[in-house]
Image 1 (cartoon, rainbow, N blue to C red):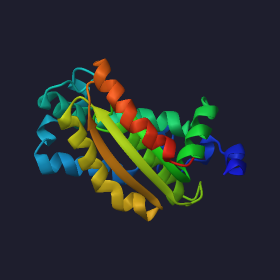
Image 2 (image 1 turned 60 degrees about the vertical axis):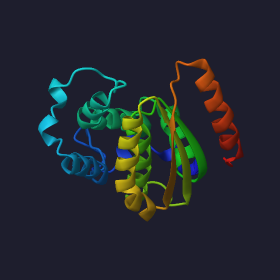
Image 3 (image 1 turned 180 degrees about the vertical axis):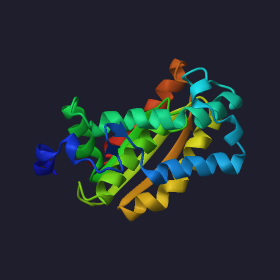
Length: 205
C-alpha cells in the first residue's frame, strides 16, 4: 500500500468521483439516499438550497430534515477531504487510504448524526477499489456511531444497510453499533469511553 500512496494523486481519481473540476459521490451511495427518501415519502421535503441549520438537532423532525437535505452535502465534504482531488491535503488523504483501505479498523464516530461522514469514507474506499486505484484487500470495519438523537442514528443504520452489499462486493465488511449518548454530559461521555476505547484497542491496526 505504501508504494501506491507515494504515487497517488488527484488526477488518478476516476470520473465517477471527480470530473471536470466537479466532485461526484459514488452512484450507489446517492441511490441509497434517494431510495430512503422514497420509502419514507420525503421527496417533497427535499430542498437543500432552502434548508436552514447545519446540525440535526434533538427532535425527530430535525433529524429527518437533516438527512433529507444535508446528508449528501456532508458526504461530499468528507469525500473531498479524503480523496483530495486537488492535492491540497496529501497527508490527510494518505492517512485515510492507509488506515481504511485494508485490514481491520474500529471507528468511533462521535456526534455521528445520520452517518454521512463515515458512510462517505467507506463509499470512497469502495469506489477506489472498484476502479482499481487501490488493492481489494479485506477490510473489516467495526463502527460505533455515537449521537444524542436516536432518530439520526436510525437514519445512519438504514442508509448504511442499503449499501452493505455494494461494500461487500469490494471486500469491505461493516459491523455497526449504535450508541445513544449526550456528549455534553460528562458522566455519559466517560461511560462511553470506558466501553468503546477498550474495544478499539483490541482491534489490530
